[in-house]
Length: 337
Ligand SMILES: [Zn+2]
Image (cartoon, rainbow, N blue to C red; front, side, top):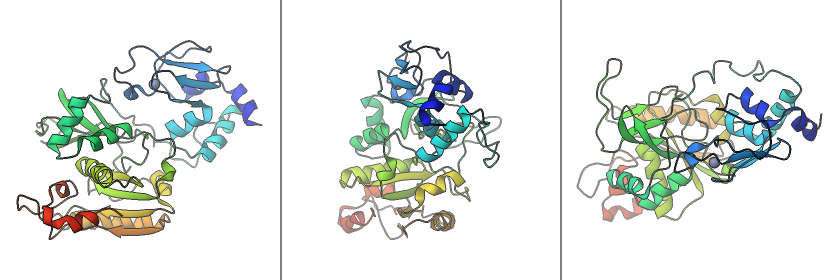
């Protein structure tokens, strides 16, 4: 079956329903409906702006510009390469089941619970995050543009949230810098992982970028604040050739199997936390091992011991490096790959 035939046999409304995308989804070209990427819209897409075209084989959002066909839709929502998405699309058009037996059937079951007001935020939100994490506000804006930083209400608190287009994992921190209070089920915690998250996914690996494979380098950091700090250094050092990703916690022993193929052929640098018990570095060693086996071209690490902040405190993570004493300027230069 050709791709054109497959597109005719599997029109977008049917594909969208089979993928479980939120409705209502119209069955004709030109009728506006709510964009599938509402957090690309400042207003949450209150005014429906997505529509189908080319006899239900294309989609386009007139507000955020997202457009494509059934294959790009599969790439987005099933995290497939273009080649795999094409194959899957043709299979689906031929009536094949959505999940072939070689993918774990339970993998997509737990759906990520996102705040209903998930949004890009305003300049004031970006400035607040820049202030609390001592970052350049332009790098915060960059993280928003790359789709790895969003804002929303979690447990009634205004939060900043790290996330990516895979929608596999998201973690929130309060805008006021305070921890989330203890609940019946959860202890007091600085960061709240949203329900349905799979923390083995390195968040940031699927940015809002049309050609993420063009980044030849990947920075692997630990935690949301370090993810933003990585963007800070890339921006302030005019080095936009690396893609930052974050493992959300050292207790994640393995990287998600689907994530590993993204590391093949790339230069990778890890930035483990300098925890007193060595746990941060031990975790980074395990991740490096898996990344190595996945075929990374080169793997290196950056260590913080010996570095001090402007205020004399030791540097223990990448976010602290934004406060490095001026005399350690050469260390700052060696942060990037
Ligand atoms: Zn849109």
